[in-house]
Image (cartoon, rainbow, N blue to C red; front, side):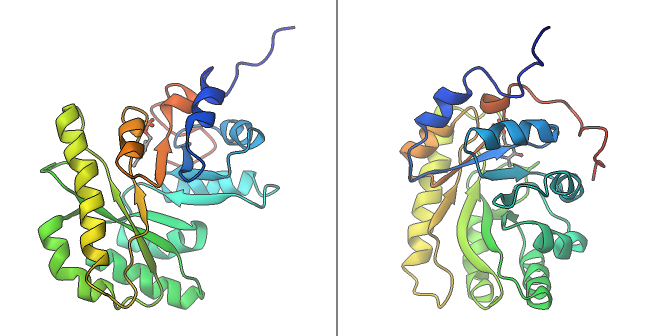
Length: 235
Ligand SMILES: *Cc1c(COP(=O)(O)O)cnc(C)c1O
């Protein structure tokens, strides 16, 4: 009998052990079957990242026997799905507009929850990507500080696809600097304690520049399918 193919990359253990204890490893399982989540869970991983609300809901239903998972939404969120996102995720890393933040705040109030959120920031020009530009964000901070039902405690950033090592460093250093700048302004609620940055190709640099959460898919699981597993909707 041959063993079932492993849901984990052969390097899983080495990479898992190389993440400093102070850094939260978020295993990104978009498009992967729930077996991948179970395999990582058996290794000790408790934080999982998904890009799409509906896909995550379908997986959560299949994993209801695991009660100690923390779910992170890392993909762009449409405002009409804000309520579902609050219902099904502990963290939302992709808060990329004031309007979305306000919708999330309203949903959180209605649901009696206080989701932890990251502001997604673009630190260098990157047209295809969502996110606040740093200058734009500056003028919105007072309004974001008034959202009493959100715990806006982080910044999330992604360097542009194919960025040079210099640009990647500029982005990571920029995120740290921006967090420090926000924290010095003495807002009532806004305190950026978390830097969500670093993916499979750049997480070592991200950690060196102060990441507190890394979002890893490919290095943990191998290359992923181009669409979700059959049992989960693409949405
Ligand atoms: C898919 C994804 C990741 C993981 O990417 P890998 O390169 O496979 O590690 C991390 N963050 C976000 C926002 C993603 O969409």
